[in-house]
Image (cartoon, rainbow, N blue to C red; front, side):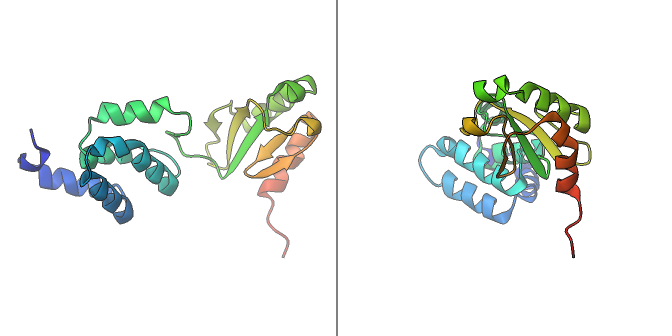
Amino acid sequence: MNPATTDNWAQVEAAAQAALTPEIVSFIAACRAKPHPESHLIAVLHRVQEHFGYLGQAQMDAVAQLLRVPAARVSGVATFYHYFRLQPRGRFMINVCMGTACYVKGADRVAARFREELGIDFGQTTTDGQFSLHDAACLGTCGLAPVVMINDKVYPRVTPDQVPGLLESLTAPAPA
């Protein structure tokens, strides 16, 4: 069945377009004009996540409708690839390196302190949307172990006792 011929396609299409940006809608339309538009699903999802910061259910449903692929396929791709996020990220992305060098030098204790201070576990975001906590297999800075990366900044030789001050420094107002 062609979705454009269903009785309520105009309403479905309008709702799907409203859930996305005009740029993303245009990109999807360009993909639809090419052979095998479903092959552009990952590229479309990257654009959606780039704009919204994650793949929300409304946006994934909109992609399915406009790209005319099953919602199960969109969801399957979004959950299969580690790169895609299905929940909003915090303002501060905290990655605790759990590679061998960092682990041997106490990364597990640093991670435990972050979990205690933030009240969340790996893969979660604080309810205020400030912090997301993740573990990393290796950040490639073994000589600085244990290492924490917050957004794009590397913090070397972090101890559990430094965690509260580190968190406070991130949220402190900038000096005038």
